[in-house]
Amino acid sequence: MNISVVVFFAFNVVATALLGGTFAGRKDNKTFKFFGIALLLNAAAFAIWSFGLLSPGNLLGSVTLGAVVFLASLVVMFYVAVQNVRNVRTRWLWMILGLAVVSGIFYVGHITALGAYISQEGFLFFNLSSVVQMLYIFALALAVFPVIDAVASGLKSIYSEIFRYGMIAQVCSGIMLITSKDSQVLYGVGWIIGLVYILLLVTFVFNSKAWHKTD
Image (cartoon, helix red, strand yellow):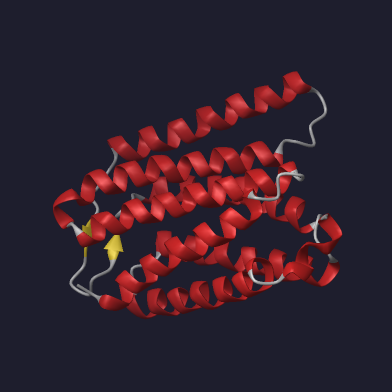
């Protein structure tokens, strides 16, 4: 067992849950609220994957369930992204399309699964086929990037940029986690994710000034 990897997963769960809970608690702002809910689902996905990492006998089931929860978080993100569509019927058509897309991604991933595994270095690899990697990356980018802009626009200028570029860094890091199997790259990405999360936590969880514009 690689302690660094275990610490990374545990920190990700806690940091994502704290950040998600903070945004979800902004009930006066629908965009913030649902973005926070999506982050909480993300935290749940990482918690499930952490269980698989600590209990290899349950790895495949944990990876599958975690993938379902992660895809559900993308659906919530997409829901936030289409809130600017004024026509309710059109908005729900977009949501149905989003649900169909993530269901398709899960189905394709399931039938082409190569088998998740834990490497000798202790890294958890989902071992996705190239096609499924592509689908996850497109879904992640299309669902999250519009939401980053939507949330950032509701924050004060300096905090808006911290949020925008911090979250873009997290998305890019997530893409590297999906595609790379190089241990040095993964260690580097892990540090980037950790440091960016610390910045986001200090800025939005432990700093009430970030919310003055939204109160």
